[in-house]
Image 1 (tube, rainbow, N blue to C red):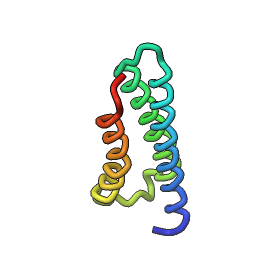
Image 2: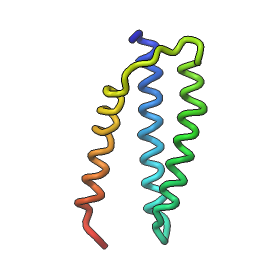
Image 3: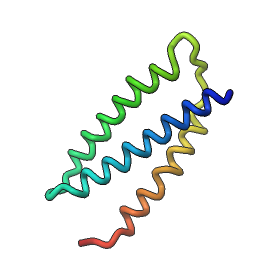
Length: 92
């Protein structure tokens, strides 16, 4: 992977993390916490990531398809701390 692709991948990764933090802040600041708002926000962020970033950084004409295992492992490593925080957070 050349340096330009690494930079683009890091931008998408950081944007994903920002979207996750924004979702947490928005949902936790609501008076009545609902999972439907979380799902809606995550779907919205997903649309932005797939429609804007994917098309911008990975155009159809020169994209090389690869196996998903590395990306899947990175995603799991990012999600695990959030899951652990949710499981072990003190209940109100």
